Length: 317
Ligand code: CUA
Image (cartoon, rainbow, N blue to C red; front, side, top):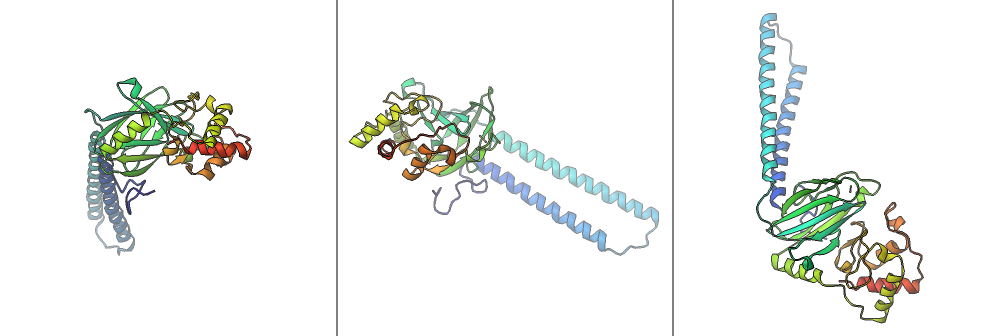
């Protein structure tokens, strides 16, 4: 998956959003200031080590030392103050209080992301998981909550990190400037599979975003082949619907990712493996092998049941 030819998908140093650009600028300020300080300190150290002792009078030598220490202190305080001011300035700019194009509620779970698109008209809301799709060039408000422990939402290419704290809702406004695909990652240790709590961000031109949202609002596809029909039946008879929802069917579990448009997503198990048939089969049969500790239970299933189930799930675009 590429953000664009040669572009990075997860890098603070290849910003694709307004806030990320400011953070990138700040990063470079810190880099250059620290580099200069390092060189100066190293030079002073070498000078002190290798300089021949001159026979200055004790009083004169002491006076020189006082001058040097005073100058170094003033310089240090000045430098730190400069870094402090630039940090505060960038921090303030990261906030956005104006109107937004879309509001998305994101809930962190061990270890996946629930993504709900808000709308004044309740019938136009929809839910997806582990993937965030947003329009380019427009501010998008993310409401951040946690279903269990502290997580942290971070898309390095687009903006700052923000904690998802249980019982304390947070918010973050992101503005992506370049269409593309970016990777996000949970940035706060949240248990065994913290590393496998990733997600994708699809930034689309506005028109494409509206088309996408319209498609997501629709109920799931009705099975068209005998195999798909059998797959849906298998799904409904297995424990799957206790946790998963598929709009348009009887499956309405709320504790695991919504699968209504499952086939349109890039990855499964919170960005752990690509959304392809082989991985999906492994994930259904033995999830603990793919992601130990996850809440997905194993399903002992005959091949004659598994194949139709895969056919059905792959049809859910
Ligand atoms: Cu969620 Cu780390």
